[in-house]
Length: 312
Image 1 (cartoon, one colour):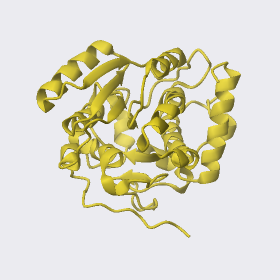
Image 2 (cartoon, helix red, strand yellow; image 1 turned 180 degrees about the horizontal axis):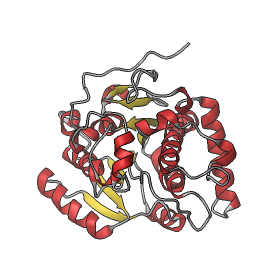
Image 3 (cartoon, helix red, strand yellow; image 1 turned 30 degrees about the horizontal axis):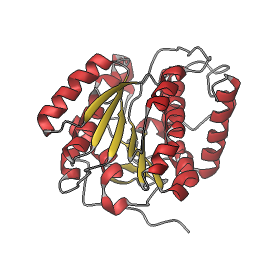
Image 4 (spheres, helix red, strand yellow; image 1 turned 90 degrees about the vertical axis):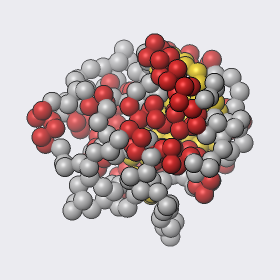
């Protein structure tokens, strides 16, 4: 029997600041990957506004420090720090995990790249899958002990509408035999981030760790820097929102008290998503992105890929 769909008083027009109005996170510690640009900034700002100690895990430390100054100024919080993290570099991820000390209450896997030209990491992995999924996979699994030590913690894994037409092709995750398609590769990486939430929640809920996936919706940020005019012309007619609105679903999953213990779900517009239907090409969640069997398979495939590359 399927669990009841979760709904909230919030909508696609709600902002991250509205989500945390009345929420107190004093004494709680949060990490936001990609916290120096786009919706990551507004995610971190809302958490700081609610009193959390926030770490901006960023590739560009200088940009991160500028963002931290801005967040401190707008929230009156002094509990905003910056740490280097390049999700495409497994050594960087390992160093971040090793450097982390103490419990962790909130992990928001926000960073990502989209529609990138064909490229591979030193391990030979396709760059979008390696960054959006494998980097966050290693980060989250490496921080599992810190998340469990918090007593009750939450992980948010950012997905995208791009997952809708991109089920995992397990026989060729790295586009070794298929012609490389930038948009399809991005979509598959975002299917992977949703499947991560399903399996991580199944494995970790016993430790008080709740994991969900969030679709921020269409937001004009530098995430789309690789999109060409032709790419944009082929996209559905999205209703674009502000970064403050794009951050709302992530912040909801990270903080809303009524979601305590609710995991393995996919949210958009601040509510659990409805199943995808072809008549609504920019809404809903595809069954392949929340399939528990695919989620378990992806987890094992990820471990195998890391072990084969000497990263496990």
